[in-house]
Figure 1 (cartoon, rainbow, N blue to C red):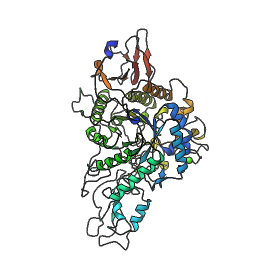
Figure 2 (figure 1 turned 90 degrees about the horizontal axis):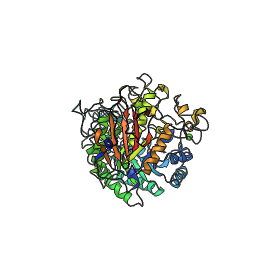
Figure 3 (figure 1 turned 180 degrees about the vertical axis):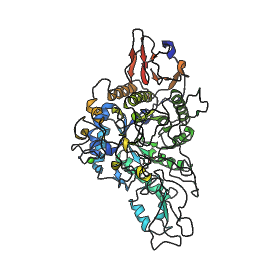
Figure 4 (figure 1 turned 60 degrees about the vertical axis):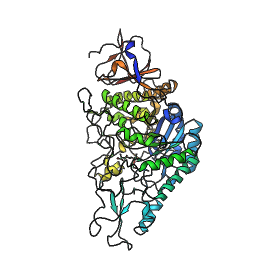
Amino acid sequence: MTSTAPLTTGDLTAGAPVHSLAGSGEWWRDAVIYQVYPRSFADGNGDGIGDLPGVTAKLDHLKQLGVDAVWLSPFYRSPQKDAGYDVADYRDIDPLFGTLADFDEMLAGAHERGLKIIVDLVPNHSSDQHVWFQEALTAAPGSAARERYMFRDGRGPAGSDVPNNWQSIFGGPAWTRLAPSEDDGPLGPQWYLHLFDSTQPDLNWENPEVREEFEAVLRFWLDRGVDGFRVDVAHGMIKAPGLPDWEGQVAMVEGTVEESTDKATDPGAPEDGSTGAGHHGPMFDQDGVHEIYRAWHRVLAEYDGDRCLVAEAWVEPLSRLARYVRPDEMNQAFNFSFLTAPWDAARLRTVVGASLSTMDAVGAPTTWVLSNHDVVRHVSRLGLADIGSGPLNGIGANDPQPDLELGTRRARAATLLMLGLPGSAYMYQGEELGLPDHTTLPDDVREDPSFFRTGGAEPGRDGCRVPLPWVGGAPGNGFGATGKTWLPQPDVYAELAADKQYGVEGSTYEMYRTALELRRAEKIGAGVLSWVDALTDSPDVVAFRVAGVVVLANLGAAPLPLPAGTDVLVASGDLATSADAVAVPADTTVWLRA
Ligand code: ISL
Ligand code: CA
């Protein structure tokens, strides 16, 4: 393989900053935030399901890793029809995960270690087991109890047709009809709207009582001492007036990613960083949602310290997403345009540049994310032959299988690129171990409602939710004392377990730890980004400078020789060393002293 011409030190000169916002100030502006998915993180009582005592027991792992904050997916009382994103009581812990005392202990333990805690708020819908919905079921049409949800009469003379044609994001119609009751009028039982599972009725956010209730819920957790909230489906709470029909269909992750394109060969590649991660239609991104976030901003402002609101909003283009983080609304929004960008240098430069400048325009930090509990982990995603259109929704046993070696190499390179970017970065539990998805889960162990509601057409998200391996080779790889795990782990988890990587040079865990330490020491999160001049049009290399560090990611096939005497701070893989040069091989990222 021929190398490209060696770079000289002069070639690493960077141009003007892409944005102005240095991220210092509130802690969240440059924080690295680690997502704990409680049921799969660590099991404290041996029932095979992770819990809050399990989280508390592993706080030192997070501290050692070097993250700033932890976001926990829901642990509230819930029948677990959507793994806790179906909340029956917003003020209590599900017995599966522990008690409020266990929560307080976990929070105190985190704070003692200087870790912030962000909890998940699910305001678009409740569980059908929530006391409000139970009340609505026995109340009459038009009653105050029904007004808290989205009940409608059906169409047709007997009201037997769905009120509109909306589809659930998990598949099937977005409406379910109640059982007949004596209160029914001539149109028979009413229907209720659920953008997700039928056990997740959408709340009516036009109703002031709903708004008051959620402000009280915010206060409940703020009073307990949480540092912020991740807001679920933040783009969905307000629906267009009249609930008009819409022919579109929203999948869990819509559109996935487009073909990998190079601006030089594809002048149609979007300038605004759009990747297909945005969702449109009358149920999403309605202007009315912003009033809710302004009110919440005021609630948080009553509290001491820097409490934050993070939007989970699948909205594109980035200029629409930026509206969620205007100065009087939320503080951060997940950057799904980055997550869905293909492994392509030109497309990555576009989305990184557009993200920074668009968020800068509203004074918000940019966030970065590669994996979470809803998408195929980046090790598996990037290990698919065609990284331009890989599935994000789950990989099933009958689908083409990822190449673990390739995926791991690219994922480590992608991670090092991400952690070199200014702003705030989100990581998903287990990515510090380089975990892949379980991509051959048998259907009979699956639990994700999207698998069932699509009749198996979508494998669903269970593959990225497999219990973590802590002790390689122990029963359940040390997930809990009994070895039980609510989903089976793939064989490779034994060698990727945390204890097999601690202190092991070259392990994924040590790469993350080193990068996080450097990121903190060099103040990368609070820096500004400039592109390395010589490589702004490179089809293969993403190269930028932040603070005192140059980040070079080589996505091409040819090794990239470094200037003589370059000080390499961290590398995502082995470098190629020959007599006259050190080179960055394919799918490898390095941080250099600028
Ligand atoms: O809204 C969407 C389409 O516009 C979805 O992509 C949506 O944003 C996503 O499914 C929201 O996910 C979150 O809410 C779900 C839950 O199942 C996920 O785990 C959670 O992350 C319902 O609460
Ligand atoms: Ca447990």
